[in-house]
Image (cartoon, rainbow, N blue to C red; front, side):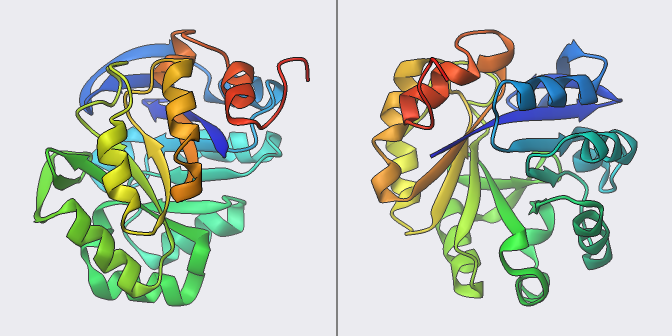
Length: 243
């Protein structure tokens, strides 16, 4: 099971939000330095989000992504403000391993096209609050329940999603294990995010691996030093603490 550090970029700084509210806590002025740190800590993948892009509908922190891609050797999934096929092509050509699509996933024809063109190079982000999917930087609800939305994604052909519980995101209140189990019943491979706060959370999530839980994106818990990346990876069996 993958443990994936998150790097959320807003105005060129690495930040964390709470429940998607655009009142951030700044952790670094240098996204490349943070990416390099996680690579040196042994991260197998990074999850990078352009928060300005997610809010405005157009990538705004490409400069910082390019700096990271130039220096970092591990796979990078990137999302935030990606609304068209050409942008996906450009990002993949630059070296992004997976492009994360959120808002445009509401367009079924667009989903069909990107699955046909890019397959697993695109991963769909399903961001939920109180049973509803939210788009456009988590500001706009979609008039469909989350499970139905995931099933529509599955019908197109996608086999993997990123699932974020908005009400838990950035709160350190713990993972919503019950809801994650419900999401896994869709038989999709799932990477989860939102609220993870302890190694006990990681142990509970590890127990869901056999049901299709593929990975965990960690943000605030790592930045607030609730536990280390090495400790999290040891819990899920990626490596021992001594490695």
